[in-house]
Image (cartoon, rainbow, N blue to C red; front, side, top):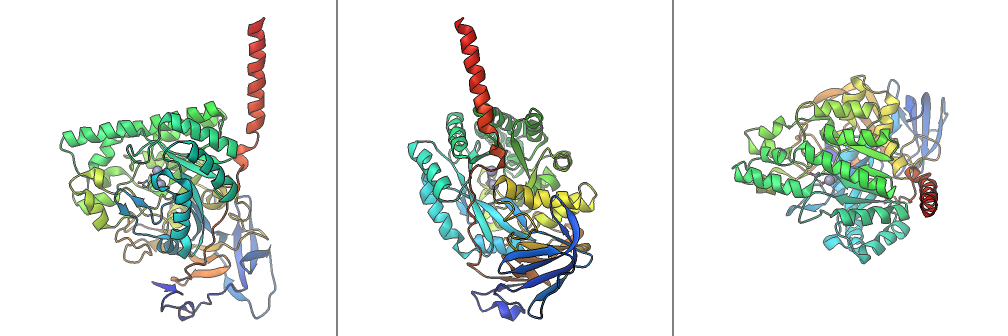
Length: 505
Ligand SMILES: NC(=O)NCCC(=O)O
Ligand SMILES: [Zn+2]
Ligand SMILES: [Zn+2]
């Protein structure tokens, strides 16, 4: 496979593509939205979907894509990726350009990255990530991490939401000594998020207990990658998930739990949702497909590539999370794409605590979810669109510009052939990393065409990506999860007032 990079000698036209935004007609396919599925054509001009109806007639200047027997769907939106992230003494091997090129080859046309602010300074973090992202070849948005609490963070959160297009903040309950925040800071952060209409995101593991668990393993002489899983068991994810959810209930704010990896965490999300609390549970591809036996591989390089946090869990968790996703207990699928190559991972060869945490997935997500959830019969094609694209667009308040095949939506579209097949290999993937946690994975279905911003960027197994062509997508506050929150607050306050009155008599 070939990446055609218009900024290099592999110019777009050399790949047989135009790098401009052409007029495109996708003909004869089945158009799938989260709400509806119909036989229809899709007409695209100037980066926008102009028409969706059967038998659209066009002139000779239009590029025709034959989608007979195939599904035409919104491009995937990955709610969780880390590109050019500095973490654990390394920087991810995928930057915005290479990670996004890989994403486009796999049918994802937008991702939301996490700004990790230096010394907790949000404004500086935003500027540095805008710089990192300037070579983007697909659209992207930002979540902002809050790694400490003080007045300047509180003020900066306001600036991020009101001026910079950020509507979500991530709080880490793990990574003691670096990103981890206290419950006090978490509470302050939740209150601030709520007042701004921004969604709090939580990495839920008990960081103090993880620290203790790591010490236990090292004291026992367990220094290999298996020590990573053993030191941070599901109970610590369950505890932190429960704590975050209960504190969110206390504040009455919506909450989003990132990378739900275990039954323990998933059941906390399920319990909260059943009680009516607005909690979103994000699965990631690794949580749905892998089990932790890989961490016991005698080859360090193989075992280390699977080290991520929270860890990949033991047998049974993946199937339970698939079931939770198919029944709506979990709402969407991300990747937590955060790639470190073998050399970077080997910095933890003698101490699992030093292995940079993270796995790949941004390129593989769409086909692996298709194979695992749709080809297996677990969910419908419309549900697939919902969990890989539409739900993310709705939660982060960019629907229907993103996440839909509708007239007026951005022309981020894929053509998926359910009768094709795929095989994953680090030799042919487009990420810069030298390993793949899905190495050798084979399955049914493949993304044959990706259109991003109205340009054909992936066709005939060739990429035609242009650095700088991706746009920053501003995400406005007060998405649908905030509907009715103030009404519930009013009712709560009047019930308190009524109570006080009774006590006074
Ligand atoms: N998940 C992981 O191992 N790396 C990325 C950082 C995070 O999301 O916690
Ligand atoms: Zn995390
Ligand atoms: Zn992450």
